[in-house]
Image (cartoon, rainbow, N blue to C red):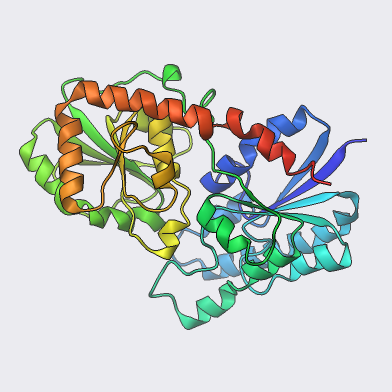
Length: 362
């Protein structure tokens, strides 16, 4: 008899990078083994897309109510599953009632997965009401109730170990064979130009402010230089020759294949320390020279001077980017070593045994 797993996730299948790269890309491996799985999202696709449209308050309230209704009806099938894998949270607002019911009423084994410091707030301007509604203290409660915890870096693991000894470091990984594989894509850019690139969501666009002065100076120094920002909304920065590429799952990889250097600036704070280095891993998997802030897991992923650079100050950013702009051979060497690093330690292939082991614990 196959082991049945229920995945409780926030987002529609295929639409969230966090969800895609932490669990969805392992589903084929589950299909080919002794497991049977079901995935239930809180938000429907229509609801999820509507959340990012200004206004539509009634739509958003109704979408939230539908999400809680979906979660309520899921409980009627809980008894047939051996494991309940919860990514981030079962519901976006309020206390962890669903998790409590799963653990204490149905007595199911919860595997709790997260890849950000979700017990902290990321927005200093957040209202007191919203902070109360988010009920972030639920993270420690879910950790206590969980059978096992899957955390995306050691910083997150350390937090989880305060409440549970059964913690696994499960890195966010890259599909280096079928997705982030430069052999599958052709560059279609002017070979005489050099492009610095960044990719991310609207919530991380603010980090580009850290390198805005450096990029501005470099654009004035090098006429052949371009900056490309791949995001779900344009950045609020002023840089000459900046190109905004709207993010989509279908076009993001091609946009990154067309860059020469990838950047990942971060502040050195608690929230950023919870990041799992995904931008850097994307660049490196596509054989792009990478410059990142020495924050959190970036210091484990990148070996300075070997497969990338770690920049602490504006001077560091300017010096390392200048070196890569002017040295094509160095860019190519770092790109090749970066991909090797991802293949060995941060790829789906290398991490599949660990992911499957989460469901083999006695």
